[in-house]
Image (cartoon, helix red, strand yellow):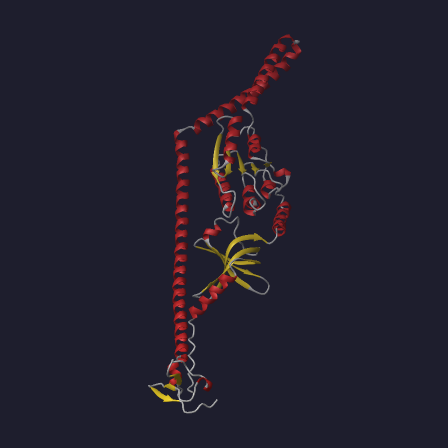
Amino acid sequence: MAIQPQEAIKPLTVLELNTRIHDLLAARFQSVVVKGEVSGVSLRSGHVWFTLKDATASVGAVIFSSTARRLPFLPENGQELVVTCQVDYHAQSGRINLVVSRLDYDGAGKLRAAIEQLKRRLEAEGAFAPDKKRALPFLPRCIALITSPSGAVIHDLQQTIWERFPNSRLALYPALVQGTASQRSLVAALRQCALDGLADVVIVARGGGSFEELMAFNQEAVVRAIQAMRIPVITALGHTSDRTLADLVADREARTPTAAAEMVVPKKADLLRQLGERGQRLQRAGLAALIVPAHQLQLRRQTLARLAGDLHARRRERLAHLTSMLRQRDPREVWRQRERSLQECRRRLTHARELTAQRMAGARLQIGGLRDRLIGLGERGVRERLRNLESRAARLTALAPEQTLKRGYSICVDGQDGGIIREAGQARQGQPVNVLLSAGRLEATVDQVIP
């Protein structure tokens, strides 16, 4: 009996092997949680690349731009983080990356410890000393508002200020107050406010939030920017049990934006009432001076002169305020404000265009990867099915009756009913039989049956 040679094993290409590894990892590690130290952070095309390591091993990780925009913070070198991710194996380069979908601090205790360490350092520098707190102006000519340009906070501030003192001049410096870009945005707004020199006092406000959402106000860059302001700063970060470092370094701290507005400007009606009361006292003092003895007349005259001087000073201050309001309504000033607003709109449009371009580039990369993967999977499936088909055809050919007959065997068939005779007991003497060979057949008669 001839021995069939075994079919040669077809080797895999490197891409085929890597693709199989990719499929196995993708199926097994669709969502894993990994803890480690961040190092080697870099930003490329809106994507954040970094290495996650521990004492004995390291692995690459990436946060794609679409995910980075919705995270409350981005990784920094030296941070201990817990990342939720998917294990991705790049078939072309044979490299593993963690595709991160969520970031968490490795315990809020460590983050609070870092903030406490910064707090102690600032306290040692005297940043929170009461003697460094500046007094608020009695009636500010201009109030700077640093907050989000949309939402309830800016509305509450404007409404409260204008209800207390109508036509107060406000200067809005838009800033992000939450998210990965809020730190840079707040610092830029504070610096622009100081550079313009328009305001007498500034309110930094937001509508409350969790410990993580208020992280920007615990960053050293924001605290230093508040500390460097030449005018008083009031923080109004909403109802929260945690006082931020920005609250501690500010000149005043309000629990809500409405309370900050009430702290900045007095009620105009109260000022008018006080002025009327003082005028009446002045008139009464003048009448009393007519009936007092002559030796007291000089004292009353001096008091009257002092009161008149105070009134003159207040009227002069009122006149300066009205002049400032008229200057604010100057068409040239309105044009400058609208020009600044137009520049801000242009900046936002450019930023939106850049973000759209980044998203389109990322989508193209994903489409290209999916297309290559689909082509690879299709070709591999066709090759595997072809090999299975060839193997089964070979086995069927080897088991065919013709192959057995070719090796010298024959089949004995009953000459009458055509049934196959497998044992001698199935035949009888004189029975006609047909013997099938690999080529042709023999017609015979049974001469003798030997069981």
